[in-house]
Amino acid sequence: MSPRELVKQWVVTFNTGNAEELAQFYHEDAINHQVAEQPVTGREAIREMFTREFAAAEMVCLVENIFEDGEWAILEWQDPLGLRGCGFFWVVEGKIALQRGYWDKLSFLKMHNLPIPE
Image (cartoon, rainbow, N blue to C red):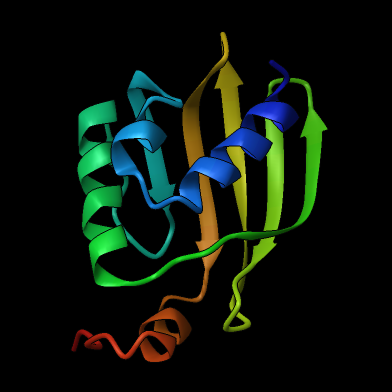
Protein backbone atom coordinates (compact mmCIF):
# COMPACT_ATOMS: atom_id res chain seq x y z
CA MET A 1 0.00 0.00 0.00
CA SER A 2 1.36 3.42 -0.91
CA PRO A 3 1.84 6.06 1.81
CA ARG A 4 -1.10 8.02 0.34
CA GLU A 5 -3.39 4.98 0.44
CA LEU A 6 -2.26 4.11 3.96
CA VAL A 7 -3.11 7.61 5.19
CA LYS A 8 -6.52 7.43 3.50
CA GLN A 9 -7.19 4.22 5.47
CA TRP A 10 -5.75 5.80 8.62
CA VAL A 11 -8.29 8.65 8.32
CA VAL A 12 -11.19 6.20 7.94
CA THR A 13 -10.03 4.36 11.07
CA PHE A 14 -9.34 7.59 12.98
CA ASN A 15 -12.93 8.67 12.33
CA THR A 16 -14.24 5.48 13.99
CA GLY A 17 -12.51 6.46 17.25
CA ASN A 18 -11.04 2.96 17.63
CA ALA A 19 -7.62 3.48 19.22
CA GLU A 20 -6.77 -0.23 19.16
CA GLU A 21 -7.33 -0.50 15.42
CA LEU A 22 -5.62 2.83 14.77
CA ALA A 23 -2.48 1.71 16.64
CA GLN A 24 -2.06 -1.16 14.16
CA PHE A 25 -1.03 1.37 11.49
CA TYR A 26 2.19 2.11 13.42
CA HIS A 27 5.54 0.33 13.70
CA GLU A 28 6.24 -1.13 17.13
CA ASP A 29 8.75 1.68 17.84
CA ALA A 30 6.99 4.47 15.92
CA ILE A 31 7.01 8.10 17.03
CA ASN A 32 3.91 10.29 16.98
CA HIS A 33 4.81 13.91 17.56
CA GLN A 34 1.91 16.32 17.64
CA VAL A 35 4.03 19.45 17.94
CA ALA A 36 1.72 20.98 20.54
CA GLU A 37 2.57 17.97 22.76
CA GLN A 38 5.59 15.89 23.70
CA PRO A 39 6.50 13.09 21.26
CA VAL A 40 4.95 9.71 22.00
CA THR A 41 7.14 6.69 21.27
CA GLY A 42 5.98 3.12 20.67
CA ARG A 43 2.80 1.57 19.32
CA GLU A 44 1.39 0.86 22.80
CA ALA A 45 1.98 4.44 23.98
CA ILE A 46 0.41 5.75 20.77
CA ARG A 47 -2.63 3.53 21.37
CA GLU A 48 -2.91 4.88 24.92
CA MET A 49 -2.62 8.46 23.60
CA PHE A 50 -5.46 7.93 21.13
CA THR A 51 -7.57 6.21 23.81
CA ARG A 52 -7.23 9.29 26.05
CA GLU A 53 -7.84 11.73 23.20
CA PHE A 54 -10.93 9.94 21.88
CA ALA A 55 -12.35 9.87 25.43
CA ALA A 56 -11.74 13.61 25.90
CA ALA A 57 -13.21 14.98 22.66
CA GLU A 58 -15.14 13.91 19.60
CA MET A 59 -12.58 14.22 16.84
CA VAL A 60 -13.31 13.97 13.13
CA CYS A 61 -10.76 14.33 10.34
CA LEU A 62 -12.06 15.75 7.06
CA VAL A 63 -9.48 15.38 4.32
CA GLU A 64 -8.64 18.47 2.30
CA ASN A 65 -5.58 17.05 0.51
CA ILE A 66 -3.24 14.10 0.68
CA PHE A 67 0.09 14.41 -1.07
CA GLU A 68 2.75 11.75 -1.50
CA ASP A 69 6.49 12.06 -1.94
CA GLY A 70 8.41 8.79 -1.81
CA GLU A 71 7.95 7.26 1.66
CA TRP A 72 6.06 10.35 2.88
CA ALA A 73 2.38 11.27 2.86
CA ILE A 74 1.23 14.75 3.81
CA LEU A 75 -2.34 15.22 5.03
CA GLU A 76 -4.10 18.58 5.10
CA TRP A 77 -7.26 18.33 7.18
CA GLN A 78 -10.02 20.21 8.90
CA ASP A 79 -12.63 19.21 11.41
CA PRO A 80 -16.36 20.01 11.49
CA LEU A 81 -15.72 22.87 13.94
CA GLY A 82 -13.34 24.62 11.54
CA LEU A 83 -9.97 23.68 13.04
CA ARG A 84 -7.35 23.02 10.39
CA GLY A 85 -4.04 21.23 10.51
CA CYS A 86 -1.61 19.05 8.65
CA GLY A 87 0.19 15.82 9.32
CA PHE A 88 3.35 14.29 7.92
CA PHE A 89 3.56 10.51 7.84
CA TRP A 90 6.78 8.60 7.14
CA VAL A 91 5.69 5.16 5.96
CA VAL A 92 8.24 2.34 6.01
CA GLU A 93 7.34 -1.20 4.94
CA GLY A 94 3.63 -0.44 5.07
CA LYS A 95 3.55 1.05 8.60
CA ILE A 96 3.88 4.54 10.03
CA ALA A 97 7.37 5.03 11.47
CA LEU A 98 6.96 8.75 12.23
CA GLN A 99 3.95 11.04 12.34
CA ARG A 100 4.24 14.75 12.96
CA GLY A 101 1.14 16.92 13.26
CA TYR A 102 0.65 20.67 13.27
CA TRP A 103 -2.54 22.28 14.63
CA ASP A 104 -3.59 25.01 17.06
CA LYS A 105 -3.92 23.43 20.51
CA LEU A 106 -5.54 26.48 22.14
CA SER A 107 -8.26 26.61 19.48
CA PHE A 108 -8.84 22.85 19.87
CA LEU A 109 -9.23 23.13 23.65
CA LYS A 110 -11.62 26.06 23.37
CA MET A 111 -13.72 24.42 20.64
CA HIS A 112 -14.18 21.30 22.77
CA ASN A 113 -14.68 23.16 26.06
CA LEU A 114 -11.61 21.46 27.54
CA PRO A 115 -9.49 22.96 30.33
CA ILE A 116 -6.74 25.31 29.25
CA PRO A 117 -3.43 24.60 31.03
CA GLU A 118 -1.78 27.49 32.82
